[in-house]
Image (cartoon, rainbow, N blue to C red; front, side):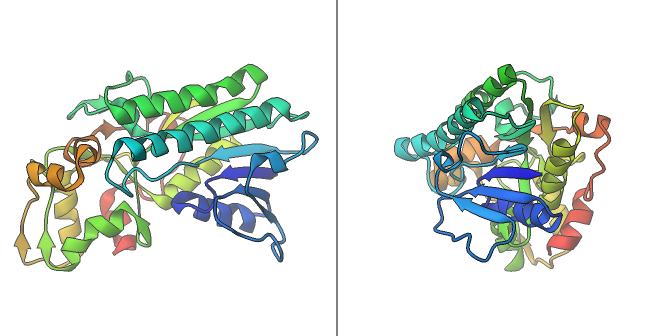
Length: 296
């Protein structure tokens, strides 16, 4: 297949790009980085979707572009960057689909479990309502922007991503730092749920959705066994030796990172991947201990 990836050089996109290339697919990769396609047998790097002519053949699109939620404190200016980077890129993808003479068969478009807002221990599957807060509003708008392709007859899969873990980037690197220094910790009460997923399962789920012509709609891309913040701490202690336990008070975290603390760290969501499991996706890392064994 000829597959367009937006955000193809990011944390998830870079692994997806490698796996698809190794499988023999031809790739078009939209990226802000200055990369040359010279010497690449199957990958063409793009600065703009305008470089793709109306007559081009694009079989599938994976839309992962967006500024990181955790890179900076959430000032009004950076929140606008977060929103614009997602909505404007998705609008460009929709515009591309509209002008292509032959439409792609599928769009797999990113979203996040922030859609559900802070819901405590409530079990949340894909049927749960949209929550409240900045992240919930962002994800709802992002999904609505992507949904325009359905009117063109394009199969749409919306992937609500959990906290993506791997050893060479993403949240796990920061989460593991105090443990590597001998300090076990959790944030706030520790009772809030962490709906995590290994990066290899994110890529696996995207491949699964690209290949399954009979499925569409919303999919929670999280591991089947979410854990509490304290549970994550205890699981990681089994892999890294620690000498003291020093929880991080919620108030201190709010002082350090502002609004982001409540949206991403102090409160959580207990999200379940019911649709992926019902459709037959087999997780490589269904429980946290098996994932941590590969990460530490």
